[in-house]
Image 1 (cartoon, rainbow, N blue to C red):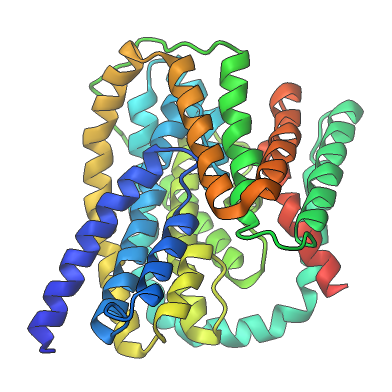
Image 2: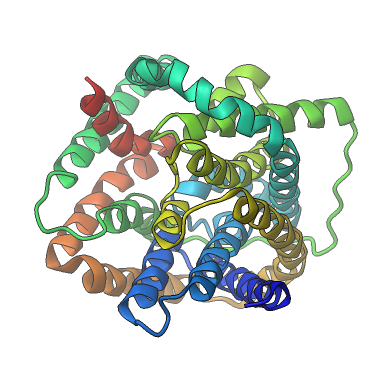
Length: 410
């Protein structure tokens, strides 16, 4: 196959992945990890597809979809209050802006942050590839201590004893739940029902309970950067936090944002949404660099790429280019789709859409994880409702991964 043909295949796969990322992003519960697994299954389940060209196309598709998903995942989080783990923290600051009629501005800020995260990390990749492996080797033995410190910090930042008790309860529930789920026999794709219940269904059910409605939104939104140095500092902190996610297992955007706010201090909702955009996209791309450097992908969809084709220097450069192109396309797409979401929220039957997505999630879980997956989904949704009803942070639910990892190392 000629270089021109490889380029054509890569372009087509990247555009298809970009389009798929739009769908997975705006349909809560349709996780990119699930789509990546389906793509890999189709690739290896059909001998006609099992060739270098198809492997490259599948890997490019998954990466472009993953980047596109990050951008578009903010739309339902901000406008509808629907979220999964990656964009869960955007719900509250995004909702505050939504109530002021600034939903589109929030989406634009998230997209801008995500674009900066991808472009900056791609530009820094030559330097990062030099230090990632030795830094990981130097810090590997401290993983349980660092993760435990983050868990303690989440509780220690509580304003009242009651708040601390609620946070501790959520951590215990989610952590114990994670320990049990990962020990269940014959459970396929355990993250699918666990994350879909903890973050997806809990958001949907919470919206139904509160009978959410949509305030009038401003369609003409502008982003004015009044303090460029403050914005640059926020972006730099986001990049640093996302890099830590790539080094330490089970750290997600939630914990990275927590570390970011420790450095930045109290920040307003627009800056927080921008920070989340940087962290979410940069962490996705950083997973590609860790996979190339020492064979560890801290992201499910990127990990699937490892099973499709080995990463080389040339393929990694190609993937970085694909990521940047997907990021620019996704940023423009969010600017366009955010206008459509304004029109959608003015006409949508919130309850009907919520029930439709709930049924869709249940069907996916039943298909890939079976009856035991449905049980995990139900329990996860119940645990996910605790922070919703107590108005606590849903980032605490990531204890479902942090506690098992701490237990593994200890």
